[in-house]
Image 1 (tube, rainbow, N blue to C red):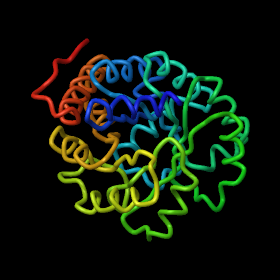
Image 2: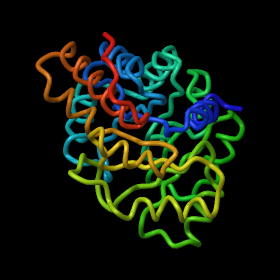
Image 3: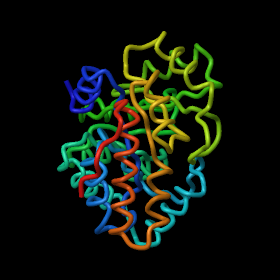
Image 4: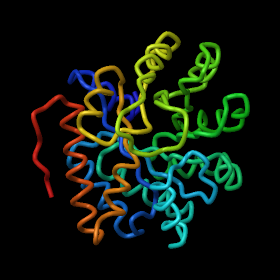
Length: 272
């Protein structure tokens, strides 16, 4: 059983969903990225997605775009992404990369999968890659023991869902709404139905992302999904902070709040 599968199994044994956090590599700085994520893990994050900064982020809303732009301007490259993965793996949290397909293809499909495995990463989420075009990626990830995560959306037909989940391993990413990333006042009402539809075609965990930013929203999504994915809310906490240290504290506090929602607890204390 992979580290990622063990994490979902442990959460399931606790009667709860897993909390998955996203942060771009090299953000808020190259030096501070891993310590910030470590503070998030210390306060209840179960698994981590490291974003590979890309200059044409079609699915990313303005908050994540701002963070990605900052990271790119600071010179973050794929080698830095792998270094961040290795650092986060040291926290004990299973660590995936979230990346558009173009950077992986240009870097070298097998090379990317191999170097990620060597860094200790356990999977890759590819939001713009379809299973029909993923032949070389499927071969490379199988070769190096890397989980593949593809996306389904509320507009996906049952036939399309079946095709996507057949190509997935690790978990299935259920985008709660059509559109770009970003915290929302409410998670799409179509998300529970989408999760239910996906479960008709797979026994893999189904995780919901796009829009979660509060404890109440995390608790709501955790009531029907296997994982709650939060990205923009963490990024915004760091963008709004006056310093990386203040940002780490804000991200840790948000992690504790979301973890309480996912765990159905009355509250947990923030650990420095």
